[in-house]
Image (cartoon, rainbow, N blue to C red; front, side, top):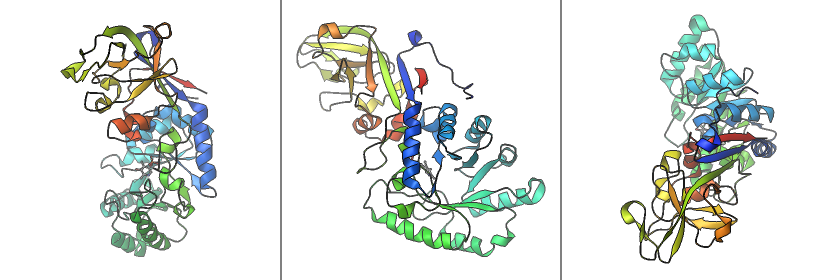
Length: 375
Ligand SMILES: *Cc1c(COP(=O)(O)O)cnc(C)c1O
């Protein structure tokens, strides 16, 4: 397995250990593929495989059986191609002007999302490149990327004039994480009508939430991302197996008298004689600052010696402080590690405290941890 882009920093020089569970990643892929069958299950690996690391994650997904991959950018496609010479790779954000030769050289398929992009790809293929497959993205109500349905109808009428094969017709669900949202049914109906205009062309609509939802959303290919990596995709379905475990170094223990403040802004005051563990990671490592704690608002928590220890005070750039008063003194020492992800604490717990989503917590995971894959 080619992992030349993975540099593992020495644990003793870092503030934490990020352990990535290859077995859980493969199991999550298998679960989603079984759920999607007979549709094909692709893997979305944009955003550095949601922060896990593009190359090691993609190599394991390939081993688990994934053959079609989605990235956001041509530069991600180039990195992916270097480790997966045989994979089908789609670039979701479209056809970047000037990068056409990269799509050709790296065998990347653009997901064409506007009439202008379709014409530019067609012209490129009519020239020296030859007929290179691409996907067409049709917008069905998200109003982000993709052709307006009327443009898709126009395109279907003149499909014979295109100088490239349409390998996939795709749309994206805006609200699949909320099972009863009316927009999902409307998008499904509109997408069905579009798909009917392109007979013989495989179709794809479902993200993770759609893959875990109504099989009517599956079409020929599903595109899960977050669920592969152990994040929660739907409000009504718990996450698959967690893939990421994060342990943070305890650099110091100290005692704070009742009534004394902790951390920047003196945002939280000790309500009792409090024992504090200072951990060597902060918002520079992707721990969302909003998940800190104050007198007004409780923050996230970590696990130490099997006990839940709430954050106390704000999250600094490189440090957080947690309340370990209830941990027996002989069970916590400087040099030990606290579990910030794992032991029942997930990315969605941090996200809830930070008014964000697990996706953002994952993709923000720091680059200065000791990172190891465990298979
Ligand atoms: C990110 C993305 C996905 C994957 O979404 P998840 O919610 O992570 O499963 C699928 N399709 C498109 C177009 C995307 O941008």
